[in-house]
Length: 112
Image (tube, rainbow, N blue to C red; front, side, top):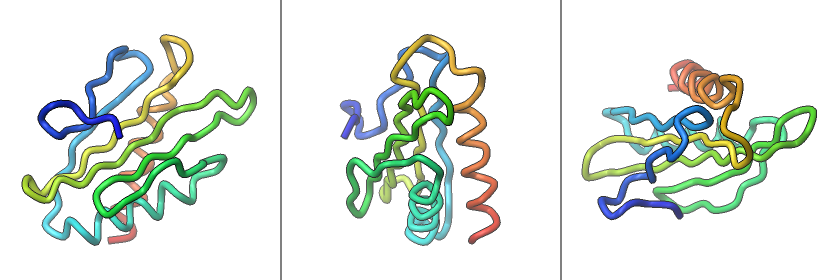
């Protein structure tokens, strides 16, 4: 689990291949569970770690199978969910990680 000293997902070191967002929900547990289900059903995803407040998977690109880390963290004390998507290789991602986060949020809104 890649948390910083404040208990948040670590910051993006390279801003051109990573995005970290924070969403607030009144129904935190339901939203977290739904988001994990959506992330788990992405094509070419492999779950790495999962517990009641954290999920980590690796999503591989379609053609070259480049790995991207996808992390979801529920922080009950703040009533927020943090989501981070970051490429492991290269300094650019052609907007893939930002699109992934946008699509996850869109699917989440449909399911809750």
